Amino acid sequence: MIGISLFNEAIPAAERTLLAKQIYNLAATEDLEIIKPVLPPLSDTSQIADFIGERSRFLFDVLGVPLDFLAEDDWMEHQEYTTVKTALRNLSPLNDSSERALALATTFNATITKDEARFQELIQVVEAHRKQFGLGSKAALKKLF
Image (cartoon, rainbow, N blue to C red; front, side):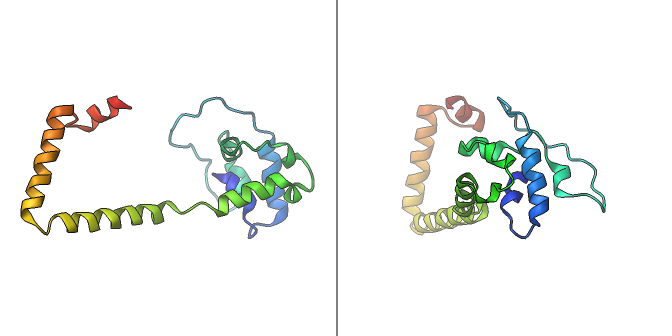
């Protein structure tokens, strides 16, 4: 996600412009496999631009933003730049969403387990559902999707 660095105003404009040019010159990729990235060696002289790879344009492809504006000298003043920057600002951190989901599940669990009879009934319903639909494992569940 080096492409996000283009919108970090703490990085000098000259360095972001170099990133923009390198991302613009990347070829589009049809399918991206989910793989562990191979990173270049890290040294005292490493710069952000050293980490540009074939996936660095992914952000723009997902948002449907053409890269043409990155080739221009005033690329930070284009509408496309503003569009992507706004989209990035509106993202909620993954941990925040996960923490809310965990809190909701914990609250729900605490609510249903206060009454032992209801908890036993819930366990029986879950067991009956598993028998009816045969989804007793993650592998079986994955087959549905």
